[in-house]
Amino acid sequence: MSARVRAMDVVVVGGGPAGLAAAAAAAERGRQVLLIDQGRRLGGQIWRHRRSAHLPLEAQALLDRLRAARVTVASEARVLDASSPTALVVDFRGRVDVQPTEQLILATGAIERFLPFPGWTRPGVTGVGGLQALHKSGLPLTGTRVVLSGSGPLLFPVASSVVKAGAQLRLVAEQASRGAWLAFGAALRHDMSKIGLAARYRWSFIGTPFRTGSWIVRAEGDERVREVVMSVHGRERRIPCDWLGASFGLVPNTELARLLGCGLTGDAITVDATQQTTIAGVYAVGECTGVKGEGPGVAEGEIAGRAAAGDLGAVADAGLRRTRELGRRFSEALARAFAPREELLALAAPETILCRCEDVRVGAVDPGWSARQAKLWTRVGMGSCQGAVCGEACKLLYGWEGNSARPPLGGPPLGAWGEALGRPAE
Image (tube, rainbow, N blue to C red):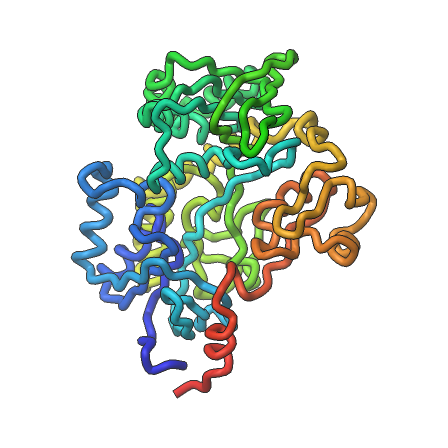
Protein backbone atom coordinates (compact mmCIF):
# COMPACT_ATOMS: atom_id res chain seq x y z
CA MET A 1 0.00 0.00 0.00
CA SER A 2 1.43 3.33 -1.00
CA ALA A 3 2.24 5.87 1.68
CA ARG A 4 0.64 8.42 -0.63
CA VAL A 5 -2.81 6.94 0.16
CA ARG A 6 -4.52 7.61 3.48
CA ALA A 7 -6.87 5.00 4.91
CA MET A 8 -10.48 6.19 5.12
CA ASP A 9 -13.41 5.29 7.33
CA VAL A 10 -15.83 5.45 4.39
CA VAL A 11 -15.27 5.51 0.64
CA VAL A 12 -18.17 6.48 -1.64
CA VAL A 13 -17.92 5.51 -5.32
CA GLY A 14 -20.00 7.85 -7.47
CA GLY A 15 -20.66 11.58 -7.14
CA GLY A 16 -24.29 11.75 -8.25
CA PRO A 17 -27.12 12.90 -5.95
CA ALA A 18 -27.18 9.63 -3.97
CA GLY A 19 -23.39 9.55 -3.55
CA LEU A 20 -23.27 13.18 -2.46
CA ALA A 21 -25.92 12.57 0.21
CA ALA A 22 -24.16 9.44 1.46
CA ALA A 23 -20.76 11.14 1.69
CA ALA A 24 -22.16 14.19 3.48
CA ALA A 25 -24.19 12.13 5.96
CA ALA A 26 -21.21 9.95 6.92
CA ALA A 27 -18.79 12.89 7.22
CA GLU A 28 -21.22 14.90 9.35
CA ARG A 29 -21.00 12.07 11.89
CA GLY A 30 -17.25 12.42 12.27
CA ARG A 31 -16.08 9.88 9.71
CA GLN A 32 -13.17 10.43 7.33
CA VAL A 33 -14.83 10.16 3.91
CA LEU A 34 -13.39 9.92 0.41
CA LEU A 35 -15.72 10.49 -2.54
CA ILE A 36 -14.47 9.00 -5.85
CA ASP A 37 -16.07 10.24 -9.08
CA GLN A 38 -15.18 9.90 -12.76
CA GLY A 39 -16.42 13.37 -13.69
CA ARG A 40 -14.60 16.67 -13.47
CA ARG A 41 -17.51 18.11 -11.51
CA LEU A 42 -19.62 16.43 -8.89
CA GLY A 43 -23.32 15.85 -9.46
CA GLY A 44 -23.49 12.80 -11.68
CA GLN A 45 -25.05 12.78 -15.12
CA ILE A 46 -27.95 14.90 -13.94
CA TRP A 47 -26.11 17.78 -12.24
CA ARG A 48 -22.37 17.87 -12.91
CA HIS A 49 -22.48 19.59 -16.30
CA ARG A 50 -24.23 22.69 -14.98
CA ARG A 51 -22.61 25.80 -13.59
CA SER A 52 -23.04 26.21 -9.84
CA ALA A 53 -25.41 29.14 -10.26
CA HIS A 54 -27.69 27.03 -12.48
CA LEU A 55 -27.93 24.06 -10.14
CA PRO A 56 -31.23 23.38 -8.36
CA LEU A 57 -31.39 24.32 -4.70
CA GLU A 58 -31.17 20.70 -3.54
CA ALA A 59 -27.93 20.22 -5.47
CA GLN A 60 -26.41 23.40 -4.04
CA ALA A 61 -27.44 22.33 -0.54
CA LEU A 62 -25.77 18.91 -0.93
CA LEU A 63 -22.55 20.46 -2.24
CA ASP A 64 -22.56 22.94 0.65
CA ARG A 65 -22.94 20.06 3.11
CA LEU A 66 -20.08 18.23 1.44
CA ARG A 67 -17.74 21.21 1.80
CA ALA A 68 -18.80 21.95 5.39
CA ALA A 69 -18.24 18.31 6.39
CA ARG A 70 -14.75 18.34 4.81
CA VAL A 71 -15.29 15.37 2.53
CA THR A 72 -12.18 14.52 0.50
CA VAL A 73 -13.07 14.46 -3.21
CA ALA A 74 -11.15 12.61 -5.94
CA SER A 75 -12.49 13.85 -9.27
CA GLU A 76 -11.64 12.22 -12.63
CA ALA A 77 -10.85 9.05 -10.67
CA ARG A 78 -12.19 5.53 -11.09
CA VAL A 79 -12.09 2.17 -9.38
CA LEU A 80 -10.23 -0.44 -11.44
CA ASP A 81 -10.33 -3.43 -9.12
CA ALA A 82 -11.18 -4.51 -5.61
CA SER A 83 -9.25 -7.33 -3.95
CA SER A 84 -11.76 -6.97 -1.10
CA PRO A 85 -14.42 -4.43 -0.01
CA THR A 86 -11.75 -2.75 2.12
CA ALA A 87 -9.06 -2.43 -0.59
CA LEU A 88 -9.91 -0.68 -3.84
CA VAL A 89 -7.48 -0.22 -6.71
CA VAL A 90 -8.12 3.33 -7.89
CA ASP A 91 -6.84 5.33 -10.85
CA PHE A 92 -6.28 8.82 -9.44
CA ARG A 93 -5.85 10.72 -12.74
CA GLY A 94 -3.22 8.32 -14.01
CA ARG A 95 -1.67 7.46 -10.65
CA VAL A 96 -2.90 4.04 -9.56
CA ASP A 97 -2.92 3.10 -5.88
CA VAL A 98 -4.66 0.79 -3.43
CA GLN A 99 -7.20 2.75 -1.37
CA PRO A 100 -8.04 1.17 2.02
CA THR A 101 -11.40 1.79 3.67
CA GLU A 102 -13.50 0.36 6.49
CA GLN A 103 -16.90 0.92 4.86
CA LEU A 104 -17.79 1.18 1.18
CA ILE A 105 -20.84 2.85 -0.40
CA LEU A 106 -21.60 2.17 -4.07
CA ALA A 107 -23.42 4.96 -5.92
CA THR A 108 -22.52 3.81 -9.42
CA GLY A 109 -25.70 4.97 -11.15
CA ALA A 110 -27.21 3.51 -14.30
CA ILE A 111 -26.20 2.98 -17.92
CA GLU A 112 -28.21 3.23 -21.12
CA ARG A 113 -29.69 0.12 -22.70
CA PHE A 114 -28.77 -0.23 -26.38
CA LEU A 115 -30.29 -2.56 -28.95
CA PRO A 116 -28.69 -2.92 -32.39
CA PHE A 117 -30.45 -1.67 -35.52
CA PRO A 118 -29.09 -0.99 -39.02
CA GLY A 119 -27.00 2.17 -38.92
CA TRP A 120 -26.73 2.46 -35.13
CA THR A 121 -22.95 2.82 -35.32
CA ARG A 122 -23.02 5.73 -37.80
CA PRO A 123 -21.52 9.04 -36.63
CA GLY A 124 -24.32 11.23 -35.36
CA VAL A 125 -26.15 8.34 -33.67
CA THR A 126 -25.83 8.36 -29.88
CA GLY A 127 -27.74 7.24 -26.84
CA VAL A 128 -30.60 9.45 -25.68
CA GLY A 129 -28.74 10.41 -22.51
CA GLY A 130 -25.48 10.34 -24.45
CA LEU A 131 -26.68 13.17 -26.68
CA GLN A 132 -27.56 15.23 -23.64
CA ALA A 133 -24.13 14.54 -22.13
CA LEU A 134 -22.41 15.59 -25.36
CA HIS A 135 -24.34 18.85 -25.41
CA LYS A 136 -23.57 19.56 -21.75
CA SER A 137 -19.90 18.94 -22.55
CA GLY A 138 -19.93 21.54 -25.32
CA LEU A 139 -21.53 20.01 -28.44
CA PRO A 140 -23.44 22.79 -30.25
CA LEU A 141 -26.96 21.76 -31.31
CA THR A 142 -28.27 25.14 -32.46
CA GLY A 143 -30.04 24.79 -35.80
CA THR A 144 -29.45 21.04 -36.07
CA ARG A 145 -32.25 18.53 -36.73
CA VAL A 146 -32.69 16.01 -33.94
CA VAL A 147 -34.80 12.86 -33.52
CA LEU A 148 -35.14 11.02 -30.19
CA SER A 149 -36.23 7.40 -30.10
CA GLY A 150 -36.31 5.27 -27.00
CA SER A 151 -38.30 4.43 -23.91
CA GLY A 152 -39.07 5.80 -20.49
CA PRO A 153 -39.05 9.18 -18.72
CA LEU A 154 -35.48 10.03 -19.82
CA LEU A 155 -36.91 11.07 -23.20
CA PHE A 156 -38.68 14.07 -21.68
CA PRO A 157 -35.77 15.92 -19.97
CA VAL A 158 -33.50 15.22 -22.95
CA ALA A 159 -36.13 16.53 -25.37
CA SER A 160 -36.48 19.64 -23.23
CA SER A 161 -32.73 20.27 -23.16
CA VAL A 162 -32.43 19.73 -26.93
CA VAL A 163 -35.09 22.36 -27.61
CA LYS A 164 -33.50 24.79 -25.15
CA ALA A 165 -30.20 24.27 -26.99
CA GLY A 166 -31.80 25.68 -30.14
CA ALA A 167 -32.16 22.43 -32.09
CA GLN A 168 -35.05 21.54 -34.37
CA LEU A 169 -36.52 18.57 -32.55
CA ARG A 170 -38.40 16.66 -35.25
CA LEU A 171 -39.90 13.75 -33.32
CA VAL A 172 -39.85 12.06 -29.91
CA ALA A 173 -40.73 8.37 -30.29
CA GLU A 174 -41.65 6.11 -27.36
CA GLN A 175 -41.61 2.37 -28.10
CA ALA A 176 -44.10 1.52 -25.34
CA SER A 177 -47.80 1.61 -26.18
CA ARG A 178 -50.09 4.47 -25.24
CA GLY A 179 -51.82 2.15 -22.78
CA ALA A 180 -48.54 1.30 -21.07
CA TRP A 181 -47.64 4.99 -20.87
CA LEU A 182 -51.00 5.87 -19.30
CA ALA A 183 -50.74 2.96 -16.86
CA PHE A 184 -47.34 4.22 -15.82
CA GLY A 185 -48.81 7.67 -15.18
CA ALA A 186 -51.60 6.14 -13.10
CA ALA A 187 -49.04 4.24 -11.03
CA LEU A 188 -47.50 7.60 -10.07
CA ARG A 189 -50.71 9.00 -8.60
CA HIS A 190 -49.12 8.90 -5.12
CA ASP A 191 -46.18 11.00 -6.34
CA MET A 192 -47.66 14.08 -7.96
CA SER A 193 -44.28 15.82 -8.05
CA LYS A 194 -43.12 13.46 -10.83
CA ILE A 195 -46.33 13.96 -12.79
CA GLY A 196 -45.93 17.73 -12.50
CA LEU A 197 -42.30 17.53 -13.62
CA ALA A 198 -43.24 15.42 -16.65
CA ALA A 199 -45.94 17.96 -17.58
CA ARG A 200 -43.44 20.82 -17.41
CA TYR A 201 -40.96 18.94 -19.57
CA ARG A 202 -43.64 18.13 -22.15
CA TRP A 203 -44.74 21.75 -22.29
CA SER A 204 -41.14 22.79 -23.03
CA PHE A 205 -41.20 20.82 -26.31
CA ILE A 206 -44.92 21.10 -27.02
CA GLY A 207 -44.21 22.00 -30.65
CA THR A 208 -42.69 18.55 -31.31
CA PRO A 209 -44.79 15.43 -31.93
CA PHE A 210 -44.59 12.80 -29.20
CA ARG A 211 -45.62 9.38 -30.48
CA THR A 212 -46.10 6.21 -28.44
CA GLY A 213 -45.94 2.77 -30.07
CA SER A 214 -43.15 4.10 -32.32
CA TRP A 215 -39.49 3.25 -32.73
CA ILE A 216 -36.37 3.55 -34.87
CA VAL A 217 -36.10 1.08 -37.78
CA ARG A 218 -32.78 2.14 -39.31
CA ALA A 219 -30.43 5.10 -39.67
CA GLU A 220 -29.21 6.01 -43.14
CA GLY A 221 -26.53 8.35 -44.48
CA ASP A 222 -23.04 8.58 -45.93
CA GLU A 223 -20.18 9.57 -43.61
CA ARG A 224 -22.77 10.25 -40.86
CA VAL A 225 -26.49 9.90 -40.26
CA ARG A 226 -28.63 11.96 -42.66
CA GLU A 227 -32.05 10.36 -42.34
CA VAL A 228 -33.86 7.96 -40.03
CA VAL A 229 -36.62 5.54 -40.90
CA MET A 230 -39.15 5.32 -38.08
CA SER A 231 -42.07 3.01 -37.42
CA VAL A 232 -44.80 5.42 -36.29
CA HIS A 233 -48.06 3.70 -35.34
CA GLY A 234 -47.25 0.84 -37.69
CA ARG A 235 -46.29 2.94 -40.73
CA GLU A 236 -42.76 3.74 -41.88
CA ARG A 237 -41.81 7.41 -41.96
CA ARG A 238 -38.56 9.00 -43.17
CA ILE A 239 -37.21 11.98 -41.23
CA PRO A 240 -34.08 13.95 -42.19
CA CYS A 241 -31.85 14.55 -39.18
CA ASP A 242 -28.34 15.52 -38.11
CA TRP A 243 -28.45 13.79 -34.72
CA LEU A 244 -30.31 10.70 -33.58
CA GLY A 245 -30.58 9.84 -29.91
CA ALA A 246 -31.61 6.18 -29.71
CA SER A 247 -31.56 3.90 -26.66
CA PHE A 248 -34.17 2.02 -24.71
CA GLY A 249 -34.15 3.09 -21.10
CA LEU A 250 -31.66 2.76 -18.27
CA VAL A 251 -30.37 -0.27 -16.35
CA PRO A 252 -28.49 -0.25 -13.04
CA ASN A 253 -24.69 -0.19 -13.28
CA THR A 254 -23.71 -3.16 -11.12
CA GLU A 255 -20.24 -3.98 -12.45
CA LEU A 256 -18.30 -3.08 -9.30
CA ALA A 257 -20.94 -4.69 -7.09
CA ARG A 258 -20.69 -7.95 -9.05
CA LEU A 259 -16.91 -7.84 -8.86
CA LEU A 260 -17.24 -7.64 -5.07
CA GLY A 261 -19.73 -10.53 -5.03
CA CYS A 262 -22.82 -8.53 -4.03
CA GLY A 263 -26.15 -10.21 -4.69
CA LEU A 264 -28.59 -8.91 -7.30
CA THR A 265 -32.37 -8.85 -7.47
CA GLY A 266 -33.15 -8.80 -11.17
CA ASP A 267 -30.92 -6.10 -12.64
CA ALA A 268 -30.41 -4.20 -9.38
CA ILE A 269 -28.16 -4.56 -6.34
CA THR A 270 -29.92 -6.22 -3.40
CA VAL A 271 -30.01 -4.09 -0.23
CA ASP A 272 -31.59 -4.26 3.23
CA ALA A 273 -33.31 -1.55 5.27
CA THR A 274 -29.97 0.21 5.91
CA GLN A 275 -29.00 -0.02 2.20
CA GLN A 276 -26.38 -2.64 3.05
CA THR A 277 -25.78 -5.21 0.32
CA THR A 278 -25.32 -8.94 0.83
CA ILE A 279 -21.64 -8.17 1.62
CA ALA A 280 -21.07 -6.80 5.13
CA GLY A 281 -19.73 -3.25 5.14
CA VAL A 282 -20.78 -2.59 1.52
CA TYR A 283 -23.79 -0.35 0.90
CA ALA A 284 -25.49 0.64 -2.36
CA VAL A 285 -27.61 3.69 -3.13
CA GLY A 286 -29.28 5.43 -6.05
CA GLU A 287 -29.89 4.08 -9.52
CA CYS A 288 -27.69 1.00 -9.04
CA THR A 289 -30.37 -0.35 -6.67
CA GLY A 290 -33.11 0.35 -9.23
CA VAL A 291 -33.76 3.31 -11.54
CA LYS A 292 -35.87 5.73 -9.52
CA GLY A 293 -34.73 9.37 -9.87
CA GLU A 294 -32.66 11.70 -7.72
CA GLY A 295 -35.13 12.28 -4.83
CA PRO A 296 -35.32 8.66 -3.67
CA GLY A 297 -31.61 8.28 -4.43
CA VAL A 298 -30.79 11.12 -2.04
CA ALA A 299 -32.95 9.46 0.64
CA GLU A 300 -31.09 6.17 0.15
CA GLY A 301 -27.78 7.99 0.34
CA GLU A 302 -28.77 9.66 3.59
CA ILE A 303 -29.75 6.32 5.12
CA ALA A 304 -26.59 4.53 3.96
CA GLY A 305 -24.24 7.35 4.95
CA ARG A 306 -25.58 7.42 8.47
CA ALA A 307 -25.59 3.62 8.73
CA ALA A 308 -21.98 3.40 7.53
CA ALA A 309 -21.08 5.87 10.28
CA GLY A 310 -22.79 3.71 12.89
CA ASP A 311 -25.97 5.80 13.18
CA LEU A 312 -29.05 3.68 12.41
CA GLY A 313 -31.52 6.43 13.27
CA ALA A 314 -32.23 7.23 9.63
CA VAL A 315 -33.83 3.79 9.16
CA ALA A 316 -36.67 4.96 11.43
CA ASP A 317 -37.05 8.35 9.73
CA ALA A 318 -40.58 8.31 8.30
CA GLY A 319 -39.84 10.94 5.67
CA LEU A 320 -36.80 9.12 4.31
CA ARG A 321 -38.60 5.79 4.33
CA ARG A 322 -41.59 7.21 2.46
CA THR A 323 -39.40 8.85 -0.17
CA ARG A 324 -37.48 5.60 -0.63
CA GLU A 325 -40.70 3.58 -0.90
CA LEU A 326 -42.10 5.95 -3.55
CA GLY A 327 -38.85 5.49 -5.46
CA ARG A 328 -39.15 1.72 -5.33
CA ARG A 329 -42.73 1.86 -6.60
CA PHE A 330 -41.58 4.14 -9.39
CA SER A 331 -38.80 1.71 -10.32
CA GLU A 332 -41.22 -1.24 -10.45
CA ALA A 333 -43.74 0.71 -12.54
CA LEU A 334 -40.94 1.80 -14.87
CA ALA A 335 -39.85 -1.80 -15.49
CA ARG A 336 -43.42 -2.92 -16.20
CA ALA A 337 -44.35 -0.10 -18.55
CA PHE A 338 -41.19 0.27 -20.60
CA ALA A 339 -39.92 -3.27 -21.13
CA PRO A 340 -38.56 -3.49 -24.71
CA ARG A 341 -41.18 -4.84 -27.12
CA GLU A 342 -40.58 -7.90 -29.31
CA GLU A 343 -40.33 -5.88 -32.53
CA LEU A 344 -37.14 -4.22 -31.29
CA LEU A 345 -35.40 -7.57 -31.03
CA ALA A 346 -35.86 -8.19 -34.77
CA LEU A 347 -34.49 -4.87 -36.04
CA ALA A 348 -30.89 -5.97 -36.61
CA ALA A 349 -29.93 -7.48 -39.99
CA PRO A 350 -27.20 -10.18 -40.21
CA GLU A 351 -24.62 -7.54 -41.22
CA THR A 352 -25.56 -5.20 -38.35
CA ILE A 353 -22.76 -4.76 -35.80
CA LEU A 354 -23.60 -6.32 -32.45
CA CYS A 355 -20.34 -5.82 -30.51
CA ARG A 356 -18.73 -2.51 -31.44
CA CYS A 357 -15.46 -3.14 -29.61
CA GLU A 358 -14.71 -6.41 -31.42
CA ASP A 359 -16.61 -5.61 -34.65
CA VAL A 360 -18.83 -8.70 -34.33
CA ARG A 361 -21.86 -8.81 -36.63
CA VAL A 362 -25.24 -10.23 -35.65
CA GLY A 363 -24.95 -12.88 -38.35
CA ALA A 364 -21.72 -14.20 -36.81
CA VAL A 365 -23.54 -15.29 -33.64
CA ASP A 366 -25.63 -18.46 -33.49
CA PRO A 367 -28.70 -17.81 -31.28
CA GLY A 368 -28.35 -21.37 -29.97
CA TRP A 369 -24.89 -20.74 -28.54
CA SER A 370 -24.22 -20.09 -24.91
CA ALA A 371 -22.48 -16.85 -23.97
CA ARG A 372 -19.25 -18.78 -23.46
CA GLN A 373 -19.45 -20.35 -26.92
CA ALA A 374 -20.06 -16.96 -28.51
CA LYS A 375 -17.04 -15.47 -26.73
CA LEU A 376 -14.79 -18.34 -27.79
CA TRP A 377 -15.83 -18.14 -31.44
CA THR A 378 -16.34 -14.38 -31.93
CA ARG A 379 -15.03 -12.49 -28.82
CA VAL A 380 -18.42 -10.77 -28.48
CA GLY A 381 -18.52 -8.80 -25.23
CA MET A 382 -14.77 -9.15 -24.65
CA GLY A 383 -13.67 -5.71 -25.86
CA SER A 384 -12.61 -2.69 -23.88
CA CYS A 385 -16.13 -1.92 -22.59
CA GLN A 386 -16.51 -5.52 -21.34
CA GLY A 387 -20.09 -5.75 -22.58
CA ALA A 388 -21.28 -2.43 -21.18
CA VAL A 389 -22.76 -1.58 -24.59
CA CYS A 390 -23.65 -4.96 -26.11
CA GLY A 391 -24.23 -6.93 -22.90
CA GLU A 392 -27.84 -5.91 -22.39
CA ALA A 393 -28.57 -6.47 -26.08
CA CYS A 394 -27.15 -10.01 -25.91
CA LYS A 395 -29.20 -10.66 -22.78
CA LEU A 396 -32.41 -9.68 -24.57
CA LEU A 397 -31.58 -11.21 -27.95
CA TYR A 398 -30.13 -14.53 -26.78
CA GLY A 399 -31.09 -14.90 -23.13
CA TRP A 400 -27.49 -14.70 -21.91
CA GLU A 401 -26.63 -13.47 -18.47
CA GLY A 402 -24.47 -10.35 -18.25
CA ASN A 403 -20.70 -10.58 -18.56
CA SER A 404 -18.84 -11.66 -15.46
CA ALA A 405 -17.25 -8.61 -13.88
CA ARG A 406 -13.49 -8.89 -14.18
CA PRO A 407 -10.67 -6.48 -13.44
CA PRO A 408 -9.57 -4.09 -14.62
CA LEU A 409 -12.81 -2.12 -14.85
CA GLY A 410 -12.62 0.36 -17.70
CA GLY A 411 -9.40 1.04 -19.62
CA PRO A 412 -6.61 1.69 -17.10
CA PRO A 413 -2.91 2.40 -17.66
CA LEU A 414 -1.92 -1.27 -17.41
CA GLY A 415 1.67 -0.69 -16.31
CA ALA A 416 0.60 1.46 -13.40
CA TRP A 417 -2.20 -0.96 -12.50
CA GLY A 418 0.22 -3.89 -12.41
CA GLU A 419 2.64 -1.85 -10.30
CA ALA A 420 -0.13 -1.05 -7.82
CA LEU A 421 -1.16 -4.71 -7.50
CA GLY A 422 2.43 -5.77 -6.95
CA ARG A 423 3.31 -3.03 -4.46
CA PRO A 424 3.84 -4.44 -0.94
CA ALA A 425 1.97 -2.90 1.98
CA GLU A 426 4.00 -0.48 4.09
